[in-house]
Length: 277
Image 1 (cartoon, rainbow, N blue to C red):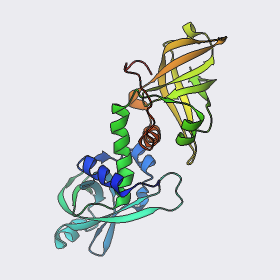
Image 2 (image 1 turned 90 degrees about the horizontal axis):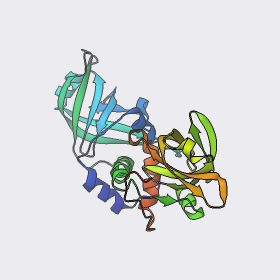
Image 3 (image 1 turned 90 degrees about the vertical axis):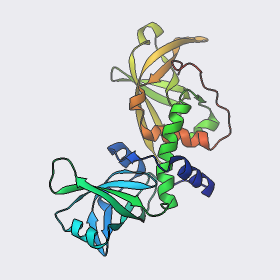
């Protein structure tokens, strides 16, 4: 994980402490949650469990109750510790820690008589590692909405800060890859230059590929060409604005842009019009 100051971690905690994150497949992948290493500890015993959702104050987990867990909880006055284990992208070693808490509620999960959903209230503020991992996701979500039209021009400096491999990339039009050059990126879209005729490209669906390094990640983001401009002196080239499908923008991409914007004081001016990516 990157170097995050104690002030930043405290800010994450204060801003997001009561906001719960559901552990979807994408969130599991982005956080590097090692699902096979998650356990609920009660007394001296451990039970495998699945983290359904978590905030800095509580968690919801799913566990099998046909193994004596309910009786153990009753004997322990519902006191437990939840074992988390993460291996974020680019990291060699896993980060493991326990968060102590108390089970506040238990109810059957779905239609199964063997599995319950447990609501755990944490006893104390969770470890900084947990706050950092979850805080980056929450911060990226907030800023991707608040700064969605803020453009990052693709320059040598911004490429270095973003860890973008090259300004040369590819855009898929009707599943056919076409070479392109990145001119800018934002949470909501991108401007690219490619060979083509504007009238044949405008309003077409397109998927833009963006390659990052350290750690290596490749995102293909679906969207649509919504505007086009001529490239001065190059009649065979066209500059195209892509508006991303907001619901399909990968969380990992949001985190990449947000980390860069949060770590620099550069003033990247964004378009005021939502339809001007």
